[in-house]
Length: 372
Ligand SMILES: Nc1ncnc2c1ncn2[C@@H]1O[C@H](COP(=O)(O)OP(=O)(O)OP(=O)(O)O)[C@@H](O)[C@H]1O
Ligand SMILES: [Mg+2]
Image (cartoon, rainbow, N blue to C red; front, side):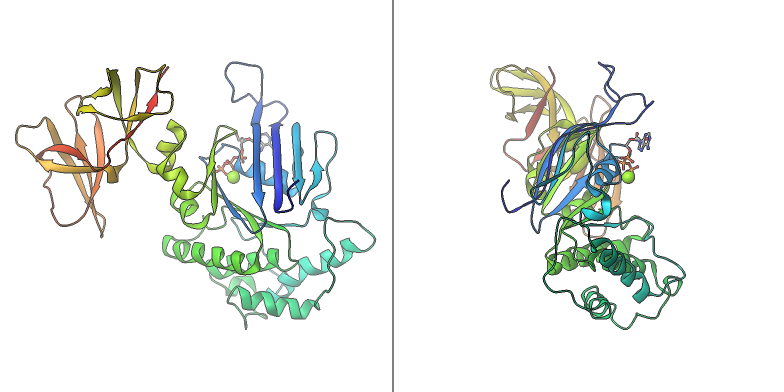
């Protein structure tokens, strides 16, 4: 395996006993179905998908808290799990951060952080984990260093109940980072926090992980959070990874209809191919399609920001709602067939509800997702 690869998942499947399956065309009961991905050292992977798609299960598999039914997990070039064997969680040198912080309420901040370090010292006695360190700072030194990194120096003697939610989550990140794990696994760490703290903390978490040089997997079902925090995003749907790419790649070139819908919140309009163009109810359009020869019907993808509304009293499209979002207006317009399409536009012109409009496209070649 390439030296720069910290995590490699190959063809992972996971079945829970007695579960009815995701796949409708087989007897399979897989919660994860043929999941493969590669994470490089220092990279931050966002694992994005709707509730129940298998994100936590995949994270627990990497951490060693869940077995696999097929495939292999390798960390830093060493296979740590197959369907027959599994390296114990404490020897994988990963750190977990949970949604509910999971701090020990009766221990101070310093004791919470030191807990992981003491456990590491004990478990490394006579055992062979994945990594061994040349020089180990004292526990006290390391607690100080790591509190400095998460911006909470001076909070050593506080108890968790004396901290805000955002501070508690930074302490739980500090606790996970203190033993210098090869990989940090974060399961929706921000979902208990209010929106302003979330926004601030997602930037802070990224900065802290980058400063520590740690590789990480960050699970979320919030697309904006995934786009903001990740170097790479893996979009999951029903136990499969539908696309892996940079946030820009996934947003600008979604590989599947699901990714387009989930990540870009795009509108879709039925389209039929006629010669070189696609016919839709808003007109004939030149569009790109990934399966160019076979497919003659599909869905035209239009992101809200791809559309400009232009007033036209003769149009059959009518503005039905307008939301003021601070920097922009968000419009819902109804087409002749009764479909609602959403558009985002700047504040320079405010179009009143009830106005008839045409849709002018801001992109040259929108994308079509074919229907076979
Ligand atoms: N121990 C278990 N036994 C049986 N089924 C399970 C078990 N753990 C998870 N599942 C099922 O596996 C599927 C994936 O669960 P998982 O917790 O991985 O989803 P998730 O993507 O993390 O969802 P969420 O965003 O809601 O946290 C779900 O249908 C869930 O019910
Ligand atoms: Mg989950």
